[in-house]
Image 1 (cartoon, one colour):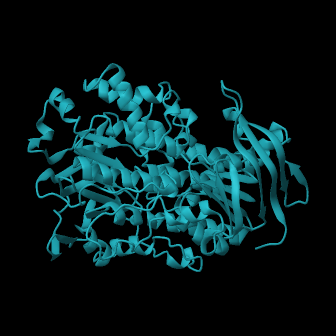
Image 2 (cartoon, rainbow, N blue to C red):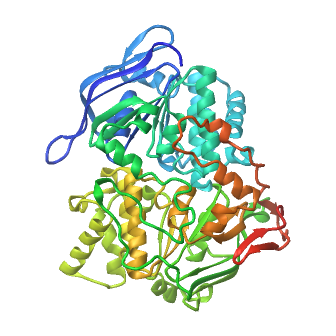
Image 3 (cartoon, rainbow, N blue to C red):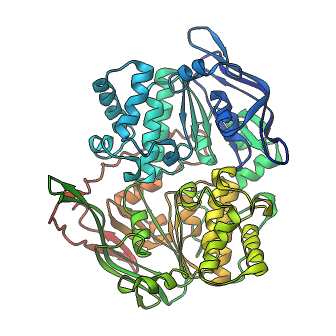
Length: 606
């Protein structure tokens, strides 16, 4: 770590206007970042960690925030000093992106849907580095390869909505790293990424720090990432700093009670070793989940999926004919029993989310069968499908995109209750308020709008909405990936509590292997559109047989600060291209049964 200070914040106070008067989001927060140092800010959702970092780039003013007190000092490499609080907008434009880079928490809102990925990446390079369009395109391609995006040449010509959530996150990271900034502010940079890519991205950020001397301000709720990356840690709670120190001291000898509780709530790989089924987690503040019944999967099949195929056509030529297909989901089969959680894990772009949407017919499958409670889902008339969806709900990956920005939260959670005519009047209001209680949101949030909540709080609203019609089956697509560890533990315990009380089944899509180990009965591992290994949680976690499953588990970060993230990264061969000529039919999958219910794919490539 280089000597000297790059950024210093002293007595920072940030306020946001409201009808009831100014709301203080951050108060009396001080920290410093040394040259070449990685500082992690951790804390619960809404603790002020993102607001503190956004203040360094004067971004809080665009959402109505005002820095009412404190000093923000930036020591540039040429020896000059900039007062970031009072710098003019022209000067800040030159600093943003060039000297201070930013990776935002929600990649879909950070990218412009009207422009291609290539255009957006080239724009910053031409503005800050003075490159020609050809040079900028070449640099953009290099950056996409660096963050391990498949077929980067094609991605440059695509629009943000054509990429998966994980791919969009990698694009945002590539854009932030492209100009080699002196300070990189990364707000939950690996939230949407599976563990293998997460390890590679964090290793890449660490390598950038080594090669360029850049400092990193990393905002995260993942304490294992903190252990692997941080030199120093700042712990925030309710807008204030409660603890600050070297990473080893914070992790091994925490002094503040909140820090101790935060560490206790972290799911750790191996915690469930030799245990028969899902178990509740420790909770900050003492809230414990005690399921009324054992979390044992039932014998009756609730959902049966057979030979499911979903392909997306690529059209070309003057007549717009289909010239090729993207084989997103290729010939996969699985079952979910009553009172069971099946976890679907794999890399971004492996087909997990498409599978979840196809099961609910939010994407129409090309072929295959889906049976729910004995009914053929794919043959149902839309009116019958609407009735069935009362028992089949979904929690989407992007909470901001799945909520209507113009509707109050209470109306959005009440909408499915009204649609299915389950309650009305005061009973409806009471039911919505109870749902907010169950996902641990204050009732004062009922009349707020999505923009007034943090990312984690919005995700809890989305979960409350999915629970509203009392469904029997929920597809949870990265339902807890945006949540800090304490709220994540609360939501996981809530899901287990509902499963014990109501017999709900889950298709739990996630990239967090420690969370999957905690909540799942069975696990299916997806790679390049196919299931490569499936079995009970103990089979997959304690006796992994496919190379990809082993690599996934090896990439999971730990709370050991002596473990180097780059030493743990085991490169995985990039998946074969999912794009095949029109008319191409791959060989059907062949599986080898290792033990009862534990299957591994034989034909590794197709």
